[in-house]
Image 1 (cartoon, rainbow, N blue to C red):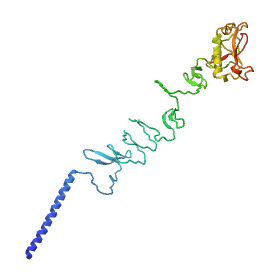
Image 2 (cartoon, helix red, strand yellow; image 1 turned 180 degrees about the vertical axis):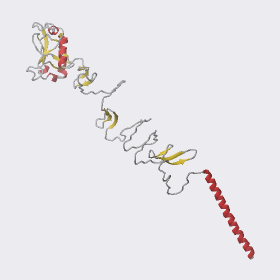
Image 3 (cartoon, one colour; image 1 turned 30 degrees about the horizontal axis):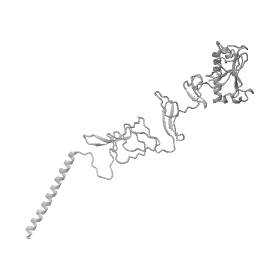
Image 4 (cartoon, rainbow, N blue to C red; image 1 turned 90 degrees about the vertical axis):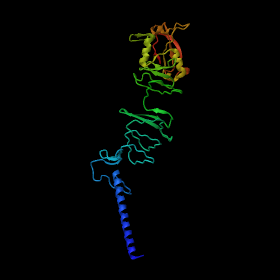
Length: 343
């Protein structure tokens, strides 16, 4: 090839290369200008991240998503915490080594395990079941209810397999039991606990505010009075049966003067109640067929010619109970002896 042609060819190639470089630069500038018109905040592709708002100690520090959308992740300086302006959805696990505080509603679609105390100042609601002691471990399951008077509990006992309330329970509606109701021996002070039901071990009783009343057809023997009286029984303005009942009530709260059939019923159910007793007047009612016994004229006569019924509990001064529980007698109304009291 002639030397002139080679020199021209070289110049053409150099000129072409220069034009290509100029074209690429022009395109690059145009592309940058196009990108800049979109105005992204930050575009980062690095393994490390520079400090955001470094050196500013007054305003919140934020990452904003979209000029129109306006949602952000920011560090709230006044509350000293990170905050999101929208909900956070996590597809993987969330692990927190410190406290997790939620001020609004929380929706948990999957199983949630809390290995320590869950403390909430708002209500906890559920559209499904709530299980306590889910692993069925050998421990009591307890719900604790607190107020300014103290804390009380509802416990399912691991020992008895029964529900136990630590305090009284008030039911304003019906109380329906398909099984048995077990009541214990409860002894409130005089004037308290009216309406209480108890089982003494031998009898069902109800408390009327002053004493216990039996639920059975006949009262049970509770003891004899220290004071004695002949057949004319009186106290204050009361005489006869009323006076006898009042004297027994004073000696044994809620009691009355025994009838003979109540003493016989006590022989069947609680013979030990006769321990230490000797004898006592007991009402029998209308006179017998062959004896003019009328409870000393309704316990108004101390005349030796009238007769009244009494019960002999012991023949040795109350040291031992008479065999079979004793027996009833008639005696003249001039005899002074204690009153037998039942309730």
